[in-house]
Length: 92
Image (tube, rainbow, N blue to C red):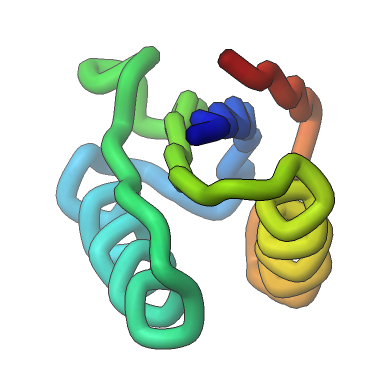
């Protein structure tokens, strides 16, 4: 069993409140959960309204499979209205 962890950090220049940020994050999480077999949580910057750190986890039997999921997730993220400023991938 392979566990893959993807960390994404966003800058949200248009956000002017925690309410706007959470609206974006709920939509973001919903779209990704609908398309991919992953778990998502906001893991950093919960109280900042223009920044967010998201952790995404996937489990599989092959590393290549998980890498493919993460590549497709990143492509989806790049289409969204947020500036991706950091991405990290780890495998256990």
